[in-house]
Length: 296
Image (cartoon, rainbow, N blue to C red; front, top):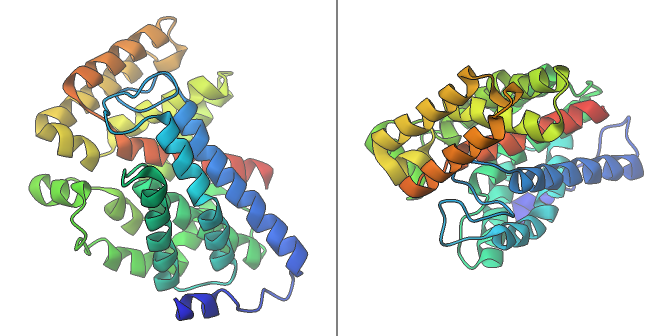
């Protein structure tokens, strides 16, 4: 950990003073936590944990997720700071490993946010780097910065599946793309699928809740989710994708009966023990990007 501490004591960019830098990093960290809370609070959310029910899970509740969020607050602050200082990928990775350990300690060993630690963490670092470079935080700029600064390392990281997570097992068994493969390409599902779906819904006059539901279903229809493959295999993955595409084909949340159809989808997933957790993590990332870019 000595190398990590040294990396985080680098001098800030000349255009920054310590007070403004810390205030910015704190704000982005708060947005990251709020974005994950927004994902947790969303309902209906097929197969996933919310404040209404536990979805397809018998090992976690909304309270488990809240404990995890509290444990991750300092992580998001530190990884934004690391991005400001242009930290190399191995520093970001160490921060993520530390954050995962704190998450597991807070939840009693339950994996609530492993994918989110990776995805939102990398986006926080990229947002920090944009600010340090004097670049306006637009989705395009954040995406380009992520790939420019850490793209090569992310590509190498995608092949490292030494940790025997459920996602890694599903990746090997079904050749499904997971969080690491998304990361290797700069999280294209966030920038090209989830965020545009959210923006379209908001532009059409729908509220934040319905826009997030539309973004989640767009992600479920597109993402090859290792969480789903782990629980339901190929047939489960097809069930999720077909259900999401059918919901979108009927107009998504623009349809008068959208909530009824989303609830039916939720109950179907629960009965089959399906949980699109990868899409949920990406939705959290979408919420973070939308908030960070809106605030500028």
